[in-house]
Length: 192
Image (cartoon, rainbow, N blue to C red; front, side):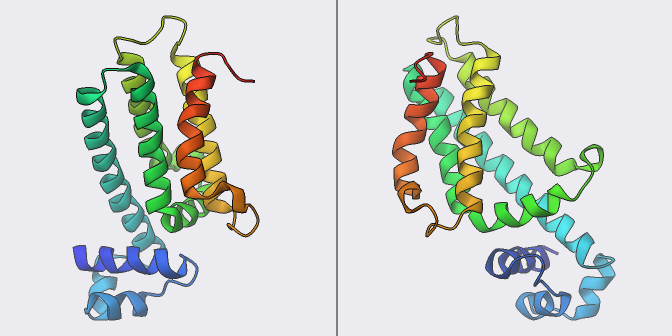
C-alpha cells in the first residue's frame, strides 16, 4: 500500500493530478494495475488517500517543528520567526503537491472536506505555539496571531500558485527574509 501511495504522490508532484493514471502509478510502484483497483475504486479514491497520507506526514512534520520551537525559543520574536519559517519550508518543499491538492480541495464542499479540517487544525496548533509563549505581549491576542499567520500563509499560497517568471522578486529566499518580519510587524501593530 505504501509503495502505491508513494508512487502516486511522486507522480502528482511531477505531473499534476489531472495527468495521473492508474497505469502510471502501477508502473512506478511496480505492482499490477489490478492490485491498485483492489484497494481503490478509481483515481479519485487514490488521490484522496494520497492527500490524506501526505497531510498526515505534514502534520507530523509540523508537530516536530512546534515541539522544537516551543522547547528552544526563549525570545518571542524568535518564536514567531521560527513558526513562519516552518510554514515557508513546508510551502517551498511541497509546492507542487500544495498546488495540486488546493485545486482538488476547491472543488469539494467545505462540510465534506476532511483535508481542510486537518489543515485548520495544523494552523490552530501553530497559532497556539505563538500564543503560549511566556514573553508574548498581552495585546497580541488570538485574533492578531491568526491574522498575522494567515497573511503569511496567503502570501505563500500566492507564491505556490504564481510562476516565478511573473513575480521574480518573490523567490523563496526573499520570502524567507521578509515574511517573519512581516508577521512580527503585524503582531506588534507596526503595519506601515
